[in-house]
Length: 133
Ligand code: AMP
Image (cartoon, rainbow, N blue to C red; front, top):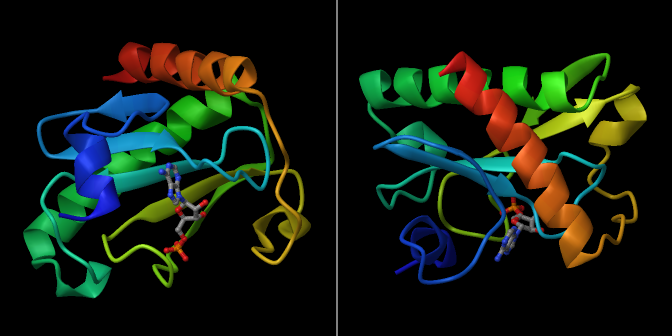
């Protein structure tokens, strides 16, 4: 079972930002910026482009809602989207609120946030997500 499956099933704690029956969103534990969020399918699949077309379409539409919630909670120029998947073998979309393209540089040093700050960020995104659901 992948670490992200365990997160989606609540076996490993995470800072929940959004969810539905099929997908789950939570804060990246090593964020590039405040609001850096990961979106995953609950179903265990490694490579995003192994997903069937209809599942991939629903995944992207869910990510769109999460991005809208992030932008409401953390005003930014745009929410950037990236898929790497080099570290964790469970499909995930990175959503990163951007003030400039530099915010999407995954080689940047990560910002350190306390658990209280992480929880407050996740709660803000979750409240915005509930409004658009
Ligand atoms: P990649 O697979 O290259 O997209 O990188 C995996 C991402 O998952 C990294 O940005 C990590 O900081 C993040 N990550 C790894 N473990 C956790 C975790 N337990 N909770 C939240 N984010 C995680």
